[in-house]
Length: 105
Image 1: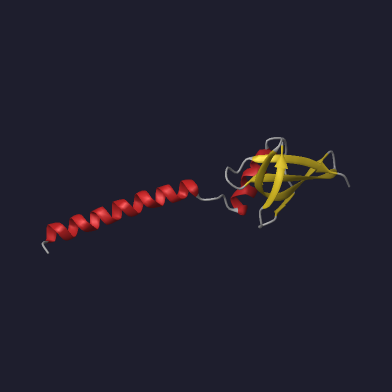
Image 2: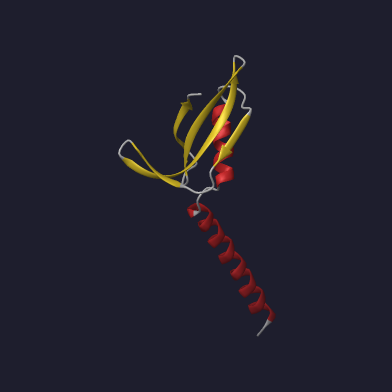
């Protein structure tokens, strides 16, 4: 095989691999760590956060008649010297906060 064909084949292989990787990234679920980071950024818009957590296994929840696979997590915020806890659900496909609620102490 000539050197031109080897270089062409290698270049074509790299290009196909790159395009396949880009397509896989578009269909890949969001990781729990990334979901927590996005949720914390959303909550930080309303004030500082003192703690956070997330379950690593997605749960199926219903919201407005639709079923979602979502990660469940929570944050703690200090408001007027009092710790308040909030629980939230983050969609595993988009990373959007689907539902959030304050947990009564």
